[in-house]
Length: 275
Image (cartoon, rainbow, N blue to C red; front, top):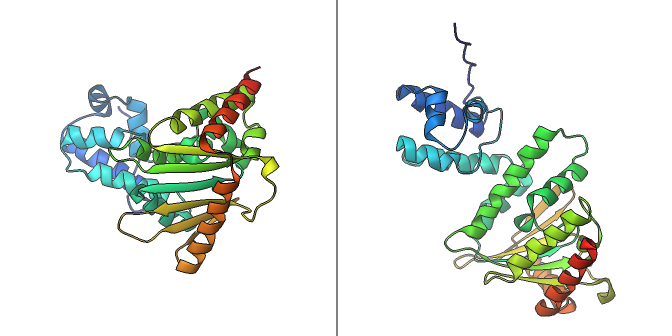
């Protein structure tokens, strides 16, 4: 006698709704979890956990399901909603707007930007920021953050211009080797056609920006600014607030090392960490 299937609760969350439709369509096609796993790149345990919403939806699964079941994009739509649902209310509007931006300008005050984080650096940073979270919770938050990075590999990625405070590089997260690989990852982006990085060294002195800020520019909408600190963020949309934040960002760019010098500076910092 087989194990009894767990009851699903599609009204509880978008992730639960994703699992509900996965089980529904799978059964309509007369497939077991093992049958479906044999057709996809994801294993039976992963699919079972997705059906019961016991794990985040893995990257790429929604597209596989839509193609295999010819589902008309329903899993892709649900995945996007589940992705937004994973963020707190105060950041969801920013997460909706970020993929639509043609240009992203960012001042990173404490950590490397999430769009440019490696997995090992990102996980190390999350462990520090969420000291009471268990491994599964850390993995869940990271999977949500990593999903954001897909916009950098889209057919029309935004141009990303980042000003890194020197403290981001000097404060080691995960140890020297993790930091060295993180800097190498940033340099890969900065040496490509869609990104620029500048370093704001301690020698530049003080400035008026106390937290990380992100400017989003659009081809068909006004600029917005997202200011964030520990556990909270605020989307600025009023023209006066956006203009003030943009001026502060422009002054940071002017005070930072030029892009070429910044890349040399980062390579030196990377070699110091390696030795």
